[in-house]
Picture 1: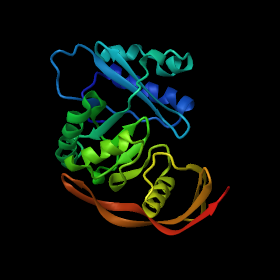
Picture 2 (picture 1 turned 90 degrees about the horizontal axis):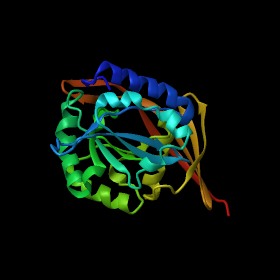
Picture 3 (picture 1 turned 30 degrees about the vertical axis):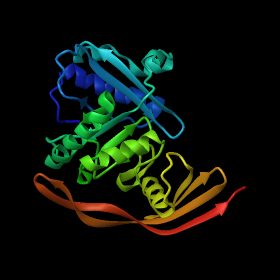
Length: 263
């Protein structure tokens, strides 16, 4: 989140909130979001999304200025259940449009966001860097914690159709934000093999690195259990387009899927 012009007090508040929220809700990541300027708007929106396998909540707070954020103690508000009035019944879709980090994010992200915003209005926002800009444009559905990559304007409609149906747009699916990388890969590989687009068809039961780079990931469904075996290798890939930059990245390869009925 380095590419911003926020006042120092606000940046310090963000870092303090991240540190304080960690023990309460787990790993926390800040993103700055924006929409096209609206001259009639007199407030700023601050979202708090809890995207966990067992807990999904989204809150929206309005402030008069960025400096007003420094008066918010998010962990305390959560602990006192003082955010119920700010709870959002509908989620948000964030698309990275951070051209300062990579021009491809701006090129593909902004165009994709405009398609989304035309359909869902203020549920669609542009964000700063979400990670993995080699997948530009990247996107997040919150609080579901669904990560997408290679988004383009043509993907907006099918993504929204899947979202309305409580499903995932599989062609652009990257994983769930509450999972570590091996589990994200196992989930995506299992879905691809089974053609499974439902949002929550299974839950993580175990993830074990049985030998260096060799993982066994087990998901439990209501009447079945699926064990995905995969290995982590490396490959060189283009990770940025401005300027072009290549580096070695992890790549997970499926070796086996073992499924069994449990009831």
